[in-house]
Structure formats: structure tokens, C-alpha cells
Length: 230
Ligand code: DX5
Image (cartoon, rainbow, N blue to C red; front, side, top):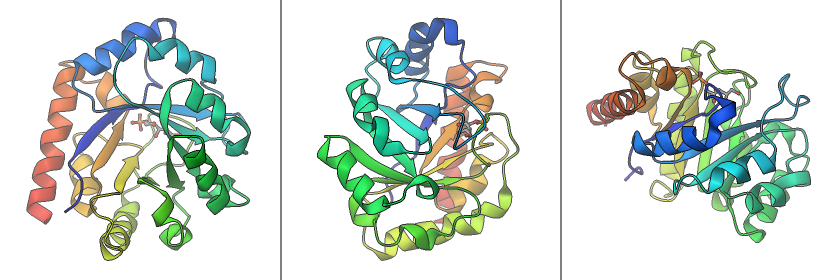
């Protein structure tokens, strides 16, 4: 049985001058966890959150934090992001010289390990590390910026990833996360293809009725899509 539907924010659109209040508001809005899009200006052409920024936000919410490490060398600062309060680290297949060892290292540091695939990267790249992760992230945009268009051609890949997880008997131990362009008009496609953890930034912050309404709407639409497509 696939894990339950979860809705999590990317805080990229948040007011960076008030991150403590912003994460408290995300918890209030019903988010299941908070994703920090960590970018190093090298793996992606953008620069965002260091561990000290995340540590400053940590005391303002009880929600779990995950760091989406869009960085060239995730081993370099993995320990710092865990010390800052991230209980899960997501590393990119494309950034790891030795992915298996990197994932083992994250677990040895006390966090849960997860792996992300850019749009052009086939799911076969993670076939041999599923035993080391509790989440696989299928990107539906090219990483680096929020507010991009959802790449719908990733839906067969999401379904392929879902089949690999289920085929390995890991449905109840691995989340299938999708990140990029998730909104009321795209969430059903992603959830219907097999995603159970949906990341949204723009769609949450731009919703006319506010964060809570946006979270509720995405959760409802994703749940309906999964039931319909089960
Ligand atoms: C890309 C980022 C974005 C962000 C979500 O590197 O990871 O996908 O989280 O942004 P929206 O929801 O605005 O597409």
C-alpha cells in the first residue's frame, strides 16, 4: 500500500526576512513537512539556504525538515544540514560520484537518506539504492527556480518509479515525491501517476484564499486522483 498523500511546501516563495513566522504559518496551514531548496550556485544557477538559516527557522515549528540538496558535492555539508535540524537529506543522482556511499553516509549521520532525479535521468539510476532511501524525488522541472512550468512528460516516469518501488515490495517504506510546477491543475496528473508526496511553492503562496486553502485543495485533488487511478 503506497504511503499516504502528503503536501509539503518549498519555502522559496516565502518572505526570507520572516522565515520563523513563515514556517509557523506553514505548520498552521496543515503542511506535513517543510522542504528547504538548498542551492549552491554551481549545481544550479541559484544560491539559497545555508545551514545557519535553516537552524534559525528550526525552533519556530515542530514540522520535520528535509533539505533538497541541489549542490555539487552533497557529502561536503551533509552533517551541517543535519545539525541544523533536517531529518532527511535529498541528494541528486547527477551530483554524486559515489551515490551508494553518499546515502550510506547520510544514514550513518542519523538522518534519513533520499535521492532525486532530474528530468532527463532515468529511474534505472536508483534501482540499486532503493534499500538505502525512504524517498525518491522525481523532478517535474529542471532544478534551480520556483515558478516554472510542470513538465507533464514526466508522468510516465513517475509511473515507472511507482512500479519499481511497488515491485521491490517497498510501497510502505518509500515516499514518491514530485517537485516542480505542482498546482491545482497538475497535482492530479502527478498523484494519478503514483506520487504520494507533493511539493509546491508558487501554488501555495499564490492561492487567493491563502496557504491553508491551498494545502487542503492540493491534498483533496491528489487523494481523489489516486483513488480514481488506483
Ligand atoms: C526547483 C525547486 C522548485 C520548487 C517548487 O529547483 O525545487 O521546484 O521547489 O517550485 P514551484 O512549486 O513554484 O514550481
